[in-house]
Length: 95
Image (cartoon, rainbow, N blue to C red):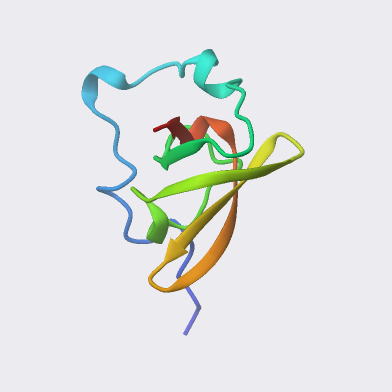
C-alpha cells in the first residue's frame, strides 16, 4: 500500500483557527524580533506553512537560543531530552 502519513496528519483540531481570527495574518507577529534568552510559547499559525514544527510540540514553552536565517532556534525539553526546533517567528508568542 501507499505510504500516506505526513506531518499534518491528524491535526484537524490543532491547526483550526477560531472563526473570528480567520483572514489576513498580523504582520507584527510575522516580523517580530526576538533575542537570545527570551521565553516563547509555541503556537501554530495554520495559514503559514514555512518554519512549521511537528504537531507533537504544540503548546510547549521554550527558550530562544539563536537565529538561523529568518527563523529562530528554540530549546525545549521533550520529556527528559533537550531538543532544538527551528521555528518561524509567526508561530511564536512571547511568554
